[in-house]
Image (cartoon, rainbow, N blue to C red; front, top):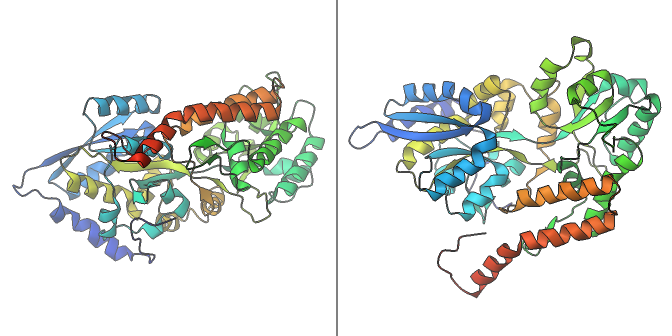
Length: 442
């Protein structure tokens, strides 16, 4: 990846970070000494809990007032687009990483590379490279990673041991053998793994591990007929063919946590939010029996690639107070606040320094995430990705239910994706022909 921020690779001493934050007070005072007010939209539970940090920021920066608005994730996308259309965007807002390309295409965000270059608080080299890459489009940085997300294995260690599997699998071959052994130990109603039909991430993860491009020709066409994607899709379907994952509604558990606690399923592919959920939803009798592990690798070079996810902080192009907004962005993404935010929310920090400060890289359930985050890749950076993901889900389910053959499903998926990307091709072709008024980057 081309680093748009000219990132330094040395770690910043903690004293320098503290001094940098203290210097924000002077840097952000207005010429007239008036108090600046900035609006900050944060999503979900983070929007409620971040107020503890913004209150501290205001105490340290008396010239700036932060007005936090909590937005439910279910309404966030529509609310942001409505605000954009009405020229009422917040100064600072949180975006899921897959939404960044859409708001870049709308020309709604300010590039942050020059500010990061001059920062005495942040070091781009301290972020996980795959996560940072999700914030980069056309070699320009548009977001600061706030918290990170990826997918890996949650498994019942006791069920593995009962089946003679002494450690988590590190390769696809070991994974298949573990599932065969666990399946042999279970009753007819039990399964080694649960793969929900509405989750598009497993086939995409397997495709990334095999080097599938997913899309082709500058992301203008679907790449789902590529042999690498077809091989990954076949591996995904093998979980159902081998009866390792439930493929009918009758066999699928109604409650994932109950199914995992009872041993109805021994494995899940899921994310860091379930560390906290397992802590409160699983009975005490199995609290010491589950573990996490990086994803097995197709090629044997464990861990296997997973997807780079999480949320970032972005600056609205319409803000009248970019210096004050940047000061808050620096504050919230600095290692000390990352540690505190993890304590408040359970979200995993984007800063490696914060991981080490909180010793998350050593703890039982987060250590696997530390390993996995060293090997994550960004999804295609196009506004249409979420529509494409929904089509992947649809055709995967049709094949699993045996309503469509794999070849026919991938061919239909490609046709659908090509139609979804039709406008993108038109924009790229128009841009190649010369500047067109009103057209921003796709």
